[in-house]
Amino acid sequence: LNEFALIRRYFKRDGDDAASVPLGIGDDCALLELAAGHQLAVSTDTLVDGRHFLTDVDPATLGHKSLAVNLSDLAAMGATPLACLLALTLPVERARDDRWMSAFSDGFLSLSERFGCPLVGGDTTQGPLTIGVTVLGRVVAGAALRRDGAKVGDDIHVSGTLGDAAWALDALLRPPGDADAIAMRDRLERPEPRVALGQSLLGQASAAIDVSDGLAGDLAHLCTASAVGAIIHLDRLPMSEGLGRIDRAIAVRHALAGGDDYELCFTAASRQRAAIDALAQDSGVRITRIGEVTAGTGIVWHCDGREITLGLDGFDHFR
Amino acid sequence: LNEFALIRRYFKRDGDDAASVPLGIGDDCALLELAAGHQLAVSTDTLVDGRHFLTDVDPATLGHKSLAVNLSDLAAMGATPLACLLALTLPVERARDDRWMSAFSDGFLSLSERFGCPLVGGDTTQGPLTIGVTVLGRVVAGAALRRDGAKVGDDIHVSGTLGDAAWALDALLRPPGDADAIAMRDRLERPEPRVALGQSLLGQASAAIDVSDGLAGDLAHLCTASAVGAIIHLDRLPMSEGLGRIDRAIAVRHALAGGDDYELCFTAASRQRAAIDALAQDSGVRITRIGEVTAGTGIVWHCDGREITLGLDGFDHFR
Image 1 (cartoon, helix red, strand yellow):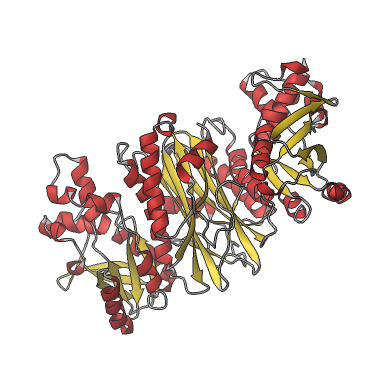
Image 2 (cartoon, rainbow over the protein chains, first blue to last red):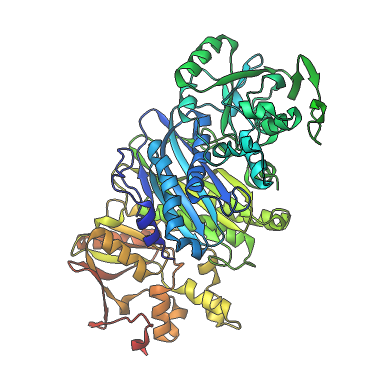
């Protein structure tokens, strides 16, 4: 396993000469420029074999997802991608599998190119398959969408639809799964980070978080950071047509606690409603107002106008 | 394994309020300020259980080393540490081992505090023990020490002594090892990154690299990047007193190919000799001139004024 040969062969592309990257792969560090008046946004996320993906996952989708989940963190800050680093720990048989390596790097680098986020460094080591990605972005100083800016009375919005990735995973793990669920496989394996949406929310949203562990948990983090509570109207949760057709208790569970959505949940003053509607129109990304920020603590769930309790043992009250 | 609780408990310290870090641990991204006129230097390195450390290694030294090897990459660019991120993949029994977790985080955060390199983000996941660290630093635009700046006729210098870490590892792997070697254990487990030295070489060195895989391999990378060759005088290799006493062939092998030295190898015009001597005096770090840059390719090894061949099968010509 020759680290240098692997990087040159699979991860170094001609034309890696972004103006913001005076020095890319191949030195002790990469060097980056940061435009004046900007702050650097940085995040790291690890994907572990058997926990974050199935061992036999298509390597191209794995490469895509490894970067996508990190770009989603930049999206949640409203940051513009600048560069990424890849720390790839590989069993030796993977490193020697040209088809696997080529597909993985293609999946990774396609997304990297599409989002103007060149790979500027990294590391390959031998060991159990573990993929660590660090992303760097820029955001105008003081403008980033943080978790701690939600104000009492703000609306709560979420992009796209929720629960499809968890629904697809469920079907894949229990063959033969629901064909409608398996059709959602791309939502699980090839999430689309909401980078443009995050940037267009700068100056409009008061707080934001990406929905990676399920809306219930992630919104709770936002509420804690902002020292506020929330009311969420479960009948407004945006779901795909397919998910909307299945058992309602299961669908809501996927939408709230499934994870892997990589949508943005954000808060905004109610006077921004028209602007946010316009933004949804312009971007082509569905945005749904699902609740409001309260002076309480924690999340209160409403359904058809009545408060309900979501037990830890599931969502059986929907049945 | 609750990621958020682990991070709060072990890795978040009060007083994490460096002026360069407007937002640290706890959001989708950290936010960093970069001083005007500077570039960002960034690098990532992974340590894998059983490859980069022994499973029963003292967790405090493991925490130290995980950050130290990354700071060494900043040192090699002449960069000033700004912040770091930690991606920690842990077996569940480690995550629940309070003594292990506390010692690991103490080792990591002590070095982080000493070098003004606050932990601003990261990730904990369950899986085989793998430690991924990303470091960020700043360096005056255009001033960084790169690998590709060596000029024909430049001197080649190296800091500290070489081979001690490999000598100690050898002794630890084959008990009962040489007591003098085991006394060098700290050189293996608690390397001291040459951060201040790297910064003071800005404007003086023409190229630099950190010696992590052994001088022979790392200097070859520098030569390739600079499109030059090198002559190295083996009789000038700086060795500790202890290593200087053992079998010469073994000692030279440790010094050239052992790895884990985390010293700096750098080139500088010969007119800089007095300045570099003064710098060694001021910093208290030994600096040894071991060779010169040539118009050739690859490294030519000299011993007592004569060219010799170092075979791949070892260094038996020294016997």
